[in-house]
Length: 114
Image 1 (tube, rainbow, N blue to C red):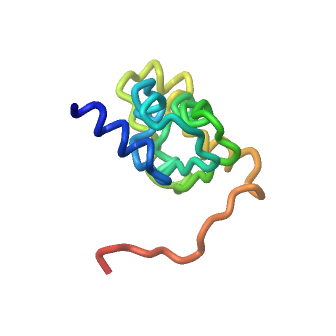
Image 2 (cartoon, rainbow, N blue to C red):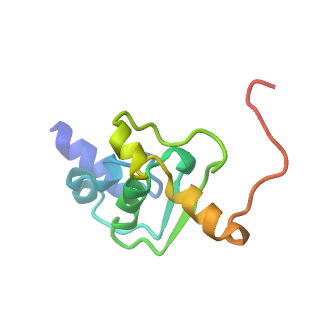
Image 3 (cartoon, helix red, strand yellow):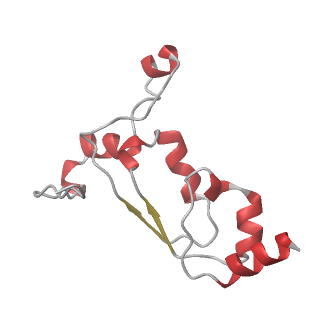
């Protein structure tokens, strides 16, 4: 069946690309059936802090590589009350503000359109 094929492909993968929220799904975790040691979170500057923690719950994770720019687009928050209470600040931005020496920023900007 389609589900068996899906599970077989994911179960044999050494790298899986998925959205942050889908990394927390039971369906994905059951299909993978194994632990991954490294979790890479891309566009972390746009990820609300509470959603960052989804990745930390993936079984077997020993390290997270957080990629993004804390000085560019913040997380998109529609409800103004949530923004006022800090939901619109990313984990990366909070770390950058509190421990700037722990964040390595690139000094050259590379764009795909150039």
